[in-house]
Amino acid sequence: MISVKSFLVGMLRSAFVVAFLSIPNPVSALTGFKSWSRKALYHKVDLCTQSCYSQIIPGLYLSNARAAADRNVLRHLNITHVLTVEAHRLPKTTFLDTNINTLFIRAFDTPNTNLLAYFPMSNAFIEEGLQKGNVIVHCHFGVSRSATLVIAFIMQKYKISYEQAFNFVRQRRRFINPNPGFVSQLKEYQRLNYDVNGFQRFEAFMNVNARRHKYKIASLAAVVVGVLVPLAVLIV
Image (cartoon, rainbow, N blue to C red; front, side, top):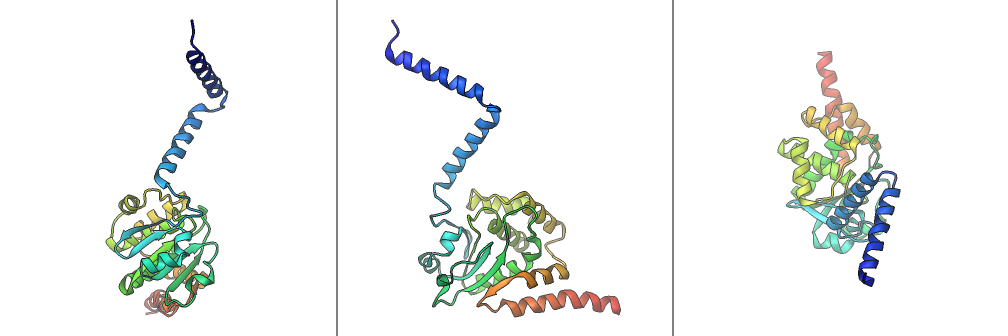
């Protein structure tokens, strides 16, 4: 005689088979579920509502917006420089009565967004922050845009390939995931031997919005050198 338990188990198995066969693409569905499960396992945090930061090298942190806007986090990490690569600035109250230097790069997390032009500026800002204190680089989730800028910095600083820099950063923040357009730009940056032409730097300088830091003068000088020196060479 079939027990109630065996009967229920049989019904559940049958229901699962029917549900599985009714999915248009069951293999993709299972893959998506596995991906979601891994994501939940790695994150263990709501990147929208909870602070989440990772130290990449001593003094350099990659974070989500929540952490970068948390004055307690900034104080705990002794942050002196905040690099925001986002569609919106952090609230003004974040830096009220502080000496924190900021750089704001307005950018969307889309493949056609050009971050390559900003690499020299962000690299210099991060390096300045490491010399004077600690730096936090963030976008909304700390996954794509900010990860791209941090990878570019690691590539340039240690003169390593995109793959090496990506793996280096991913070991310290496992869920980074630059979008395909940013990956292409990072590979192009490697091909250019970690350099960007003067006209692109000028475009970045004109587009960037910075608050209470002295980097604009240095940026302007870099642009002038990058544009005028090649022109002078051509004239001579």
